Image (tube, rainbow, N blue to C red; front, top):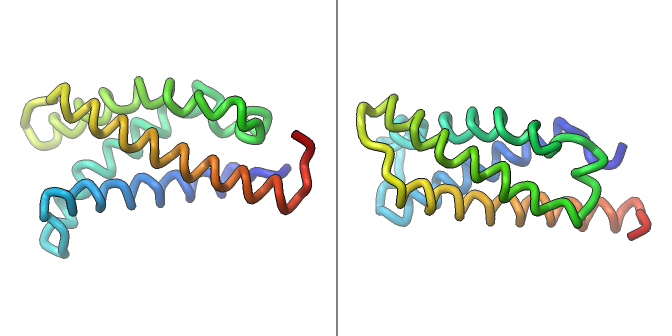
Length: 131
């Protein structure tokens, strides 16, 4: 098995965490005083991702080892982002803004594509897989 599920899970978590920090940094909200606030984005997004991703086979070796199937990340994020924003709004007793769904979903789709595409590229080079 070239791509281990554990590696994907850890990589996805790191990717989501880094993108959460970058998102807060773009608003000038980085530092220890914002850690709990970052959690209100990171945790709902992680929960939503790990509920959605398996439905699209994003932890199955057949799918994760095929670069032609990376597009499934986009479809998973179409369900993940709205769910994450709704969960976040619930925790913060606020509104679920459609623009935030687009930004959160778009940036995390790109981030996960970069992470998973890069990992797949390196893994294929190390093992010399065909294709």
